Length: 246
Image (tube, rainbow, N blue to C red; front, side, top):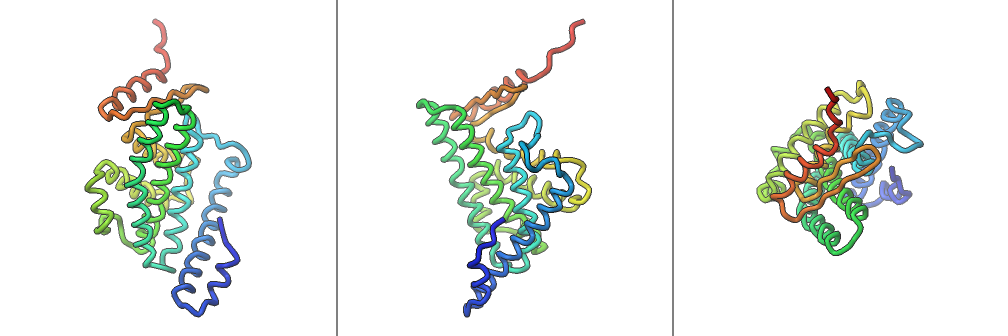
């Protein structure tokens, strides 16, 4: 949550557009306070210590929580600057376009000797940020009582080139809207798992498959897309509990 002193000065700018930007930023940060404080009241045990997220990557799970955070703040404050939708759309388009190449570059670096852990961390960052950008846009779209299918232009062109990502974004839109409607009756922190799973799906599409079994991570990276599904099956088999002996 960032509220810089300069925003206060911007509210007194002689430029009306700058005043509007300042008010929108202040409203966005105030919305963060509202939604984050509610999250704290709902799950106080999740603050001040390592997050318990089961056999999942904590880094990606925190990204999933950030997706919701930006979605909720944007949805609550969209009315203060409707035209920001174009900016958020452009940011998401660039994130989608850049993510695959960035991930492949990390995988190639691993092939050349970079540690798997470092590559794993970087790829989670890359694709987690794609979904955070989507959270901004979807929150703004829903805050203006619209939806993603009404967005055309540059996002539609990007989706034509990346149909797999379009499917994930459609699912994300539904998940976030349902979370918004149920925010005050969330049963547990597991409510963020569907977003986590979508981030993992996107990483898998781009060549990274990972799974955790007890305290051990298995991470497999591929540049060959045809091998990803077989790797996923193999890792899932590795994590299955042994069948009871008869």
